[in-house]
Figure 1 (cartoon, rainbow, N blue to C red):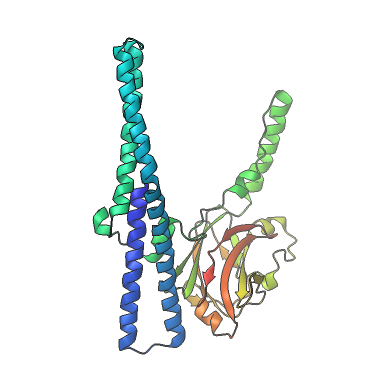
Figure 2 (figure 1 turned 90 degrees about the vertical axis):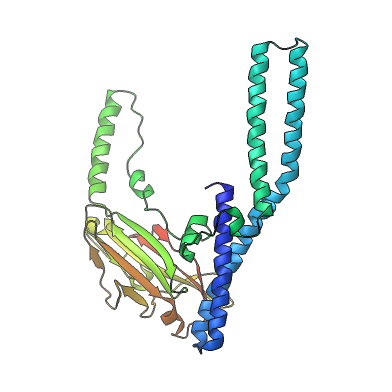
Length: 331
């Protein structure tokens, strides 16, 4: 999206944050809520409002500060055009060269005027109505489209697949034969390697961290929820089983601390396909099969742990991270 569209979306995000916070505070006056639930919802709205306001200010200030420079640049181009006319009339430039230079200056001036008009539109806008109207999205969609979160939806991990194929530039017949043999080996290796796409996002006022997994390969994969005792290299003798094993790790930051540490034995906080997950055995997913994993932050807080923030990492067997969720700030 261009800068004007981005500002319209950011301003819509800000207006929705303000509106939802007002509505919530009005609702609180009429009803009684559990303090934990109240804190969680209000903290969510406060975060969205702070995030959207900061983004709007960044765009607004950048455009405002560019106006003087743009106006000066346009004046400079106008002076160049006038000088070009004088030189052409005095015979200092051939007509063809003068026409080419004239077109270049005209195009550049038009481009700068368009940028200046956009900057003025952003600076003069008071609401989204001044920019074409309010754009309605869910909060998570605003964050994703404006790229404000660390990793709201990570793309499917593809690097690990391409790294297994050697990059060979054959220079002779021998190298071609060697390349063919290596590519054949790599193909067979990848054919037995599990592949999966991972996504993560928050819902229900940050109560749930949702993690979606889709088996995008031809082999069945296994998902450990979470890795037992945080061990990403459990004793598996079969090499092919190692290649199809994934697991989740829960990292927490305690109140008063500045660093995360691994919670090796998390309590019963996991939900799989809308049902509580209590098994310690890995889950198997066939090709194209998908699961929805949820971490209940409310249940985690109710265990008595004094936590400030959490995040989840998905790794392959051996500890290689293939997906990292966004940081979840707990009220």
